[in-house]
Amino acid sequence: MEEHQLVKDCLKGKPEAQRKLYEQFAKTMLGVCYRYTKSLKDAEDVLQDGFVKVFLGMHQYKFEGELGAWIHRIMVNTALNFLKKNRKYRDEMYFKEQPLHPVAADNPAIDLQAKELADLIRQLPQGYQTIFNMYAVEGYTHVEIGELLGISDGTSRSQYARARALLISWIEKNSLETKNENYAGK
Image (cartoon, rainbow, N blue to C red):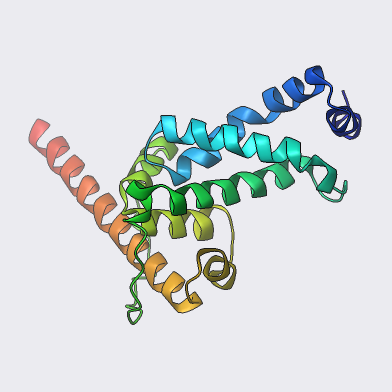
């Protein structure tokens, strides 16, 4: 079924169209939600809330741009709202205004699998994780992040730099440990 027709059928409230839309995008959008949460259960809750918003707001989709991108934006906003409302995340979303510390521009030469990197990102403190995902993964600017999270763009930059520095140190430590294990095994 063509996306244009799928949207029209969803607007008419046809359950089979809604199911098809959900099945088409759920797996990808669950990944988006999981990037912002610390558990799969929370990601699934965000996904469900996000799809409720998609179906209730379907009339706002203007067929400009990709449907998936429109749904993606709703999922990110739903995840951010979830983080703000949920106490266990909100308490970790404290952003301190501090001067930006420079981070080395060179990246560690590590062959890291995507899942391993995603797991490392998920271990970041919640504020770092959120900003890192928004900037490095989703492509938001620091100004946009500031507006969405109610912080300054300077705070966003600082939190991103700290997240990146922490990730680099974890990756370098892991690389060093792996090299030592390989050397010891020879």
